[in-house]
Length: 289
Image (tube, rainbow, N blue to C red; front, top):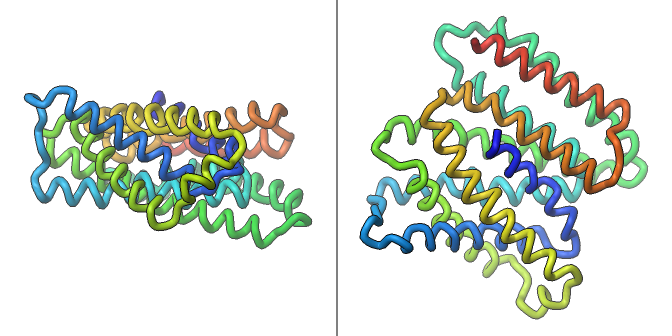
């Protein structure tokens, strides 16, 4: 739940510093993540446990699926489609993780109520957002949905693979693994910025530069480093399907932060969609039990 609250901040961040490019926002966040992880590792050099080749490759691959690649897709999706619909699409990750990582004795029929409720909530939210944004550019909104779907697939694969990796390698410390992921992600973020990011002069010329720095620090430390440690601890103690259910907190916090940033209450369709979504997740949890 705490990891979800921290992750929810990343849904509203791209809108808060919209003058900056999505590559720059992504690279800044994960460069901070990498720096914090490196400091945590080298603060105690005598206690450093270096990953072997297999672990290093796993960290690099998972860092793209769960961090830099995932968030780049999500950030572009939020810019194109707003916060609400992408956050709900990402919020279906608990369902996919349960379907793909469900225990052997759990029948598909038991999952149908939750799937129907969740699907109805997402459809209602998309319909409401499409009806208001279609006049302003329906193709752009549809592209945002496609990017959010890509981000969902990317993180779902990460969640399943990361959980299996941690459960197979119980000797790994959750904090050590988070730091290795962070260093791998930070290196990828620097490469991303060098290839596709803005130059220093362009970044300095943008308005809200101090806000950009604060968001990079908050999302890099809290939404990446600290949240990853919390998530790794949960992944070692819970099954992938049950742990995945708790990602619903990310969606609910993302919606809350979005409405606060917009300074408005949810509309009637948004209330109903969110209610259907929560009921769907609760039904899925009940089926899992």
